[in-house]
Length: 87
Image (cartoon, rainbow, N blue to C red; front, top):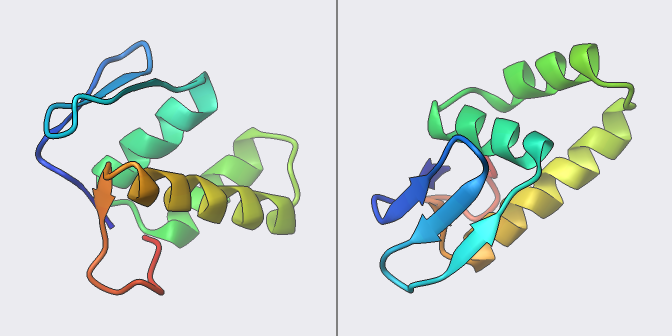
């Protein structure tokens, strides 16, 4: 999954899509996840870091992560070559 070129992400969680004119505000966890996705981190590494850092179980993290990725795709923030590959 890649963040599209039109997307600008500020350090305070403001996301702007210059292609659509849409803007979004992310909470600190969403900002952390989108930065890791933008840095091409592997899902297993992201999951491992999040499970270590936050009090969350593996199944909950995976469900929430995939929902977050689906929202990113829906709002044209990311592109996916393979629709079944979320990272």
